[in-house]
Image 1 (cartoon, rainbow, N blue to C red):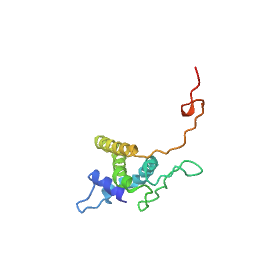
Image 2: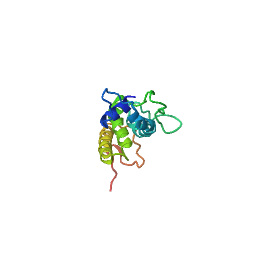
Image 3: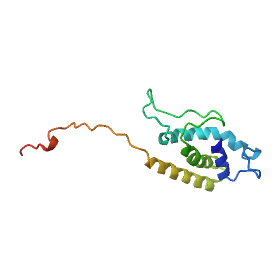
Image 4: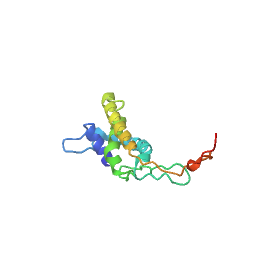
Amino acid sequence: MQIFNTAMGFMDEVSTDGKTDTTDTAEYKNRTLLILNALRGELYPYSDTYDPNTEGGRPIADYIRDMDSVVKLDDYICQTIMPYGLAAHLLMDENPSAASFFQSRYEELRNRLAVGIPAQSEDIVDVYGGIEYGQFSRW
């Protein structure tokens, strides 16, 4: 999974031959799916794949079942934002200062993305009435 590979690169956990799936990263890999599934729920409303008109409840992206699963979020989120969130969570106990950096970067990118979410529009209903179209009554 590319998100895991990128996070391992951020954390400087890449072997000399460029591999991220090693005995040193096995513990990180075991925790990755749990963390990514939490992040996917948080990031889904910012994704191009988000559909607010889902019937029957609150929309949520599909669960990530294994490291080969396709993450149902847009590529920008998967390639740019999720690796920072994953690295922050993986390093929380081991290296708090690095985790803090990665968390700050994750939040910065997420918040920047949130600014660009298009708002939905709807008709405005005048519930008060009385002075529409410039028609004023006498005082």
